[in-house]
Length: 206
Image 1: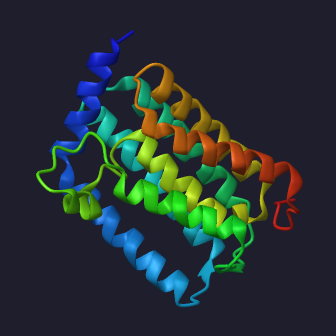
Image 2 (image 1 turned 30 degrees about the vertical axis):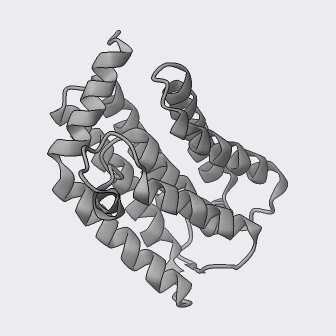
């Protein structure tokens, strides 16, 4: 198994070598936030499919930086969420200004500006090129953020799966890599897991 230093070096390599990919994801996320806040509704299946591709992006980068575990995990995650997506109804979904959505916005913004691993000369660089879409924790933070904003797509399967991936990588980041920023990911994943069991799901596939 790689040492913590080797894992951290691989994450730093991914964050700094593939900035153009993270910039592309930032543009997509920024457009999504603007449209969402303006009241735009989205097709559920399109958003879910986009989130699956978002995870696949991390798996692809993991292959390029020789991180087979992350490559397998995120390819598997993209496959699982892709399968869930195929069975869902294409219903419109939008932003609800409640505690769930506000916490989701916080998680999305946290992933958007994740201030670690990128070798940035100025703090403003994190606003458009933090490693969201490149490495696990900021990507999962944003993923869980969108899931919460849209109330888990009213799907217990989607929420529980998202929460478990988030908890695994958040706990690993804190305990193994000593990246204490990932406590935010753990908190968001725990909240999502609780919400999965106490919320009302109405869009589960048959």
